[in-house]
Amino acid sequence: GSIKFVSAVISLVGFVYFLTLLGMVVDLLRDFLNDMRMRFSSVRASNHWLILGWGDKTLLLIDELLTSIASAPPQRKCCGCGCRRRRQIVILADMPTQQMADEVQVHCLA
Image (tube, rainbow, N blue to C red; front, side, top):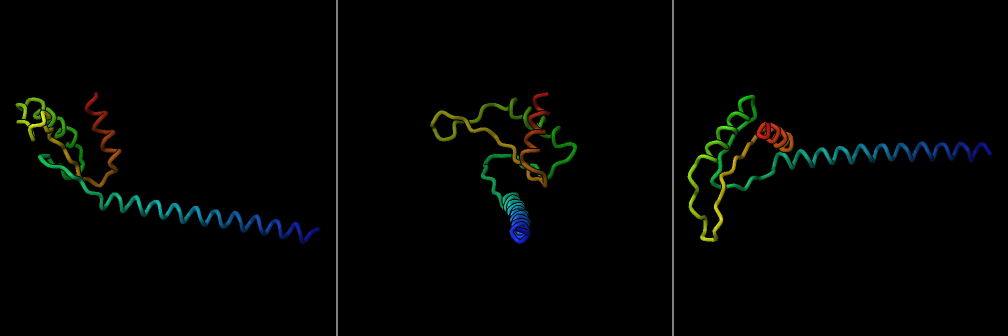
């Protein structure tokens, strides 16, 4: 009776320990992959503006660039297909992309 109880407790403790260890390994691997994705992601853009870094004046600069895009004369057709290329704004900063996009969206919609 008591041997079965002790073996069941030891099995349960081992199972919980293994799951905890596995969860920590998966979390470390996920953090590593996200870090590599952020470090080595590439941006494919041409005919664009590049902003290096994110600061308190970045949103004002984006406002100015968007104003200049809106007031610029239309560009010539890109390849005869009828579309018109748009200028892109590329921001390279030590900040998550989604956080920058959210701040720009909130600022531009306000």
